[in-house]
Length: 402
Image 1 (spheres, rainbow, N blue to C red):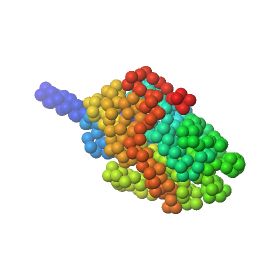
Image 2 (image 1 turned 180 degrees about the vertical axis):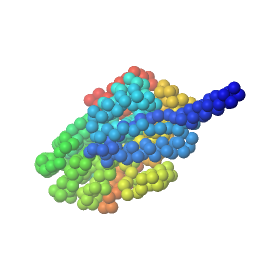
Image 3 (image 1 turned 60 degrees about the horizontal axis):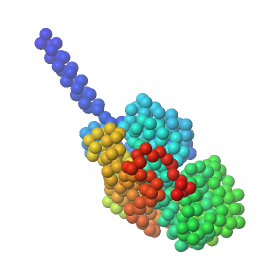
Image 4 (image 1 turned 135 degrees about the vertical axis):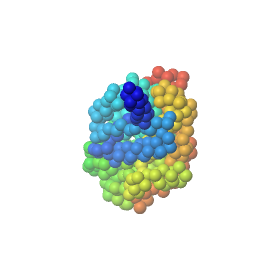
C-alpha cells in the first residue's frame, strides 16, 4: 500500500510539473507566405517569430512562453477568413497579428471584434480603421501623405498625377492625395487605378505624358506593379517628372529594380534600415543573426515587431492575457523604444504616434534619409476615432467623412 501511495504522489507531482511546464500563451499569425504578396508577408512573419523569441528569452508573458500558431494565407482573401475563424474556434488564441492588404484587414476585423480578441494590423495603409479590438501599428495616409505631398509640391511643382492599385489602399490614398494637393495649392491633373495583375503600363505612361505633371505619386503593390517603375524610367520620364511614393521599398522593390529606375525615387515611410538609433542597431543585429543580411528589412517587419512587443508589454502591465485587460492596458498610452524610433499608442484611435521619414533611392539599391518628422500623430484617425469616449464605434472612415 505504501508503494501504491508513493506511486500516486509521484504521478500527481509529475502531472502537475508537466502541466506547469506546458503552460503557454498562444497568439495567431496570418501572413502571405506564398503568392504574389509574399515579398511582404515573409518578412512580417519573420519579424513576429523574432519578436516572440526575444520575449520568450526574457521570461515570456506573465512568466509563460508565447507560442505562435501560424497560417499562410497564400495571398488569397478567402484564406484569411478561413484561418481567422479557425484561430478563434480551435486554437483559442489570445491575440492575432495578420494581414497586409486593406481587403484582408477588412475581411477579418469583424471576426476578431465578435470574438473580442485584440487584432494587430501591421502595415502602412490608407487610414481610417476604427474599432475596439483593432490596433494599427503601421503608418497611415494622414502621417505619410501629409508630409510627402507638401515636400513634393515644394520640390517638383503643383501638377500631380496618381498611379495606384484599384482597391482600398490605392483609391482611398488617391482621395487623400487630392486633399493634400488642395491644401498645398496643387492640382491632380490625372489618375490611373490599376488591377494588381496589370504588367503593361504603356497606356498609363501615355496618359502621364499627355497630362504633363510635375510629379507622379506612384503606389505600386506587389511584384507586377513594380514593373511600372522600370517602364517609367525606360520611357525617359524621370528626366522631367518627379516620382514619389508612400510604399516604394515596403516590399524591397528597391532591390529588384535597376539603379536607373530606383535612383532618385522618393519614398515616405515609417522605417528604413538606415534609421540611426540604438534600438535599430540591436534589432538589425538580432535579425541578421537569424535571417542574414542579404535582404533589407522592410517597414512591415518593424511594424509587426512593434505590435508583438506592445501586446506583450500590455499583457504584462495588465497582469493578464484577458482581452479586456490587455485592451485597457494598450489604451493607457503604452510606449516602446522601437527600431524606427519611440512609438506610442494613441488611446482613442488605436494608432501609433511615430517618426515618419522621407528618403531618396540611391544607386546601391538602398535609401538615403532626407528628412525626419518626429513623433508624427495619426491626425485624421485621432480626429475621427475616439474609442475611449465611443467604445462601440465600428467604422472605416475615409476622406469623404471629413
